[in-house]
Amino acid sequence: GGLTRAYSGSAAEAVANAHCTFFEEYTEYELEIEYYEYQKLLYEITTAGGEITLSDFGSGVSLCFASPTRISERICKKVVAATNGKRIPKLKRTYYDEEKIK
Image 1: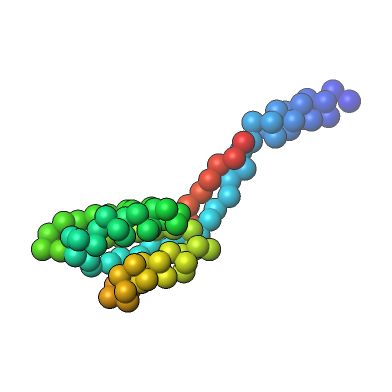
Image 2: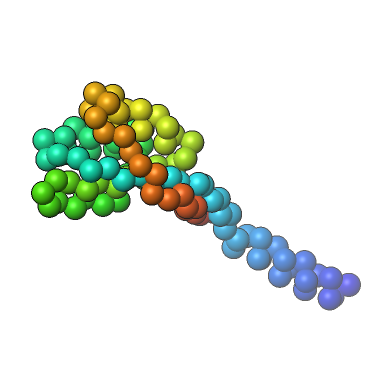
Protein backbone atom coordinates (compact mmCIF):
# COMPACT_ATOMS: atom_id res chain seq x y z
CA GLY A 1 0.00 0.00 0.00
CA GLY A 2 2.09 2.90 1.32
CA LEU A 3 5.32 1.84 -0.36
CA THR A 4 3.57 1.51 -3.72
CA ARG A 5 2.05 4.98 -3.37
CA ALA A 6 5.46 6.44 -2.45
CA TYR A 7 7.17 4.85 -5.45
CA SER A 8 4.38 5.74 -7.88
CA GLY A 9 4.45 9.36 -6.69
CA SER A 10 8.22 9.53 -7.22
CA ALA A 11 7.91 7.90 -10.63
CA ALA A 12 5.19 10.35 -11.67
CA GLU A 13 7.34 13.28 -10.54
CA ALA A 14 10.36 11.93 -12.46
CA VAL A 15 8.32 11.56 -15.64
CA ALA A 16 6.85 15.06 -15.25
CA ASN A 17 10.35 16.58 -14.95
CA ALA A 18 11.91 14.48 -17.70
CA HIS A 19 13.10 15.91 -21.00
CA CYS A 20 13.07 14.07 -24.28
CA THR A 21 16.28 14.39 -26.22
CA PHE A 22 16.44 13.83 -29.95
CA PHE A 23 19.75 13.51 -31.72
CA GLU A 24 20.01 14.56 -35.33
CA GLU A 25 22.92 13.75 -37.59
CA TYR A 26 24.71 16.79 -39.00
CA THR A 27 27.25 16.95 -41.79
CA GLU A 28 29.95 19.61 -41.92
CA TYR A 29 31.69 20.66 -45.12
CA GLU A 30 34.63 22.88 -45.97
CA LEU A 31 35.26 25.13 -48.95
CA GLU A 32 38.08 27.34 -50.18
CA ILE A 33 36.53 30.31 -51.94
CA GLU A 34 37.37 33.78 -53.20
CA TYR A 35 36.29 36.92 -51.36
CA TYR A 36 33.78 37.86 -54.05
CA GLU A 37 31.95 34.54 -53.56
CA TYR A 38 31.57 34.85 -49.79
CA GLN A 39 28.36 36.89 -49.48
CA LYS A 40 26.57 34.91 -52.18
CA LEU A 41 27.46 31.56 -50.61
CA LEU A 42 26.66 32.81 -47.13
CA TYR A 43 23.18 33.66 -48.39
CA GLU A 44 22.70 30.36 -50.27
CA ILE A 45 23.84 28.22 -47.36
CA THR A 46 21.92 29.96 -44.58
CA THR A 47 18.65 30.36 -46.49
CA ALA A 48 18.73 26.64 -47.33
CA GLY A 49 19.01 25.68 -43.65
CA GLY A 50 22.77 25.50 -43.19
CA GLU A 51 24.89 27.21 -40.56
CA ILE A 52 28.31 28.76 -41.09
CA THR A 53 30.71 27.20 -38.58
CA LEU A 54 33.94 28.91 -39.69
CA SER A 55 34.95 31.85 -41.83
CA ASP A 56 38.71 32.35 -42.00
CA PHE A 57 39.96 35.20 -44.14
CA GLY A 58 43.48 35.00 -45.57
CA SER A 59 44.60 35.05 -49.19
CA GLY A 60 41.19 33.51 -49.86
CA VAL A 61 38.35 32.47 -47.59
CA SER A 62 38.17 29.15 -45.79
CA LEU A 63 34.51 28.49 -45.14
CA CYS A 64 32.95 25.65 -43.19
CA PHE A 65 29.24 25.01 -42.91
CA ALA A 66 27.04 22.39 -41.32
CA SER A 67 23.47 21.26 -41.75
CA PRO A 68 21.26 18.37 -40.82
CA THR A 69 22.40 15.46 -42.97
CA ARG A 70 18.89 15.07 -44.38
CA ILE A 71 19.26 18.41 -46.24
CA SER A 72 23.03 18.55 -46.77
CA GLU A 73 22.95 17.23 -50.34
CA ARG A 74 20.51 19.96 -51.35
CA ILE A 75 22.75 22.65 -49.83
CA CYS A 76 25.84 21.26 -51.56
CA LYS A 77 24.00 21.38 -54.89
CA LYS A 78 23.12 25.03 -54.23
CA VAL A 79 26.79 25.82 -53.56
CA VAL A 80 27.89 24.09 -56.76
CA ALA A 81 25.18 25.84 -58.79
CA ALA A 82 25.94 29.25 -57.27
CA THR A 83 29.60 28.92 -58.27
CA ASN A 84 28.89 27.42 -61.71
CA GLY A 85 30.60 24.20 -60.65
CA LYS A 86 33.85 25.87 -59.54
CA ARG A 87 33.42 25.04 -55.85
CA ILE A 88 32.52 21.62 -54.54
CA PRO A 89 32.13 21.25 -50.77
CA LYS A 90 34.47 18.70 -49.18
CA LEU A 91 33.19 16.52 -46.37
CA LYS A 92 34.80 17.51 -43.09
CA ARG A 93 32.87 15.41 -40.53
CA THR A 94 29.53 14.10 -39.38
CA TYR A 95 28.30 14.48 -35.83
CA TYR A 96 25.15 14.34 -33.76
CA ASP A 97 23.55 17.39 -32.23
CA GLU A 98 20.85 17.17 -29.61
CA GLU A 99 17.59 19.00 -29.35
CA LYS A 100 15.87 18.94 -25.99
CA ILE A 101 12.10 19.01 -25.97
CA LYS A 102 10.07 19.24 -22.81
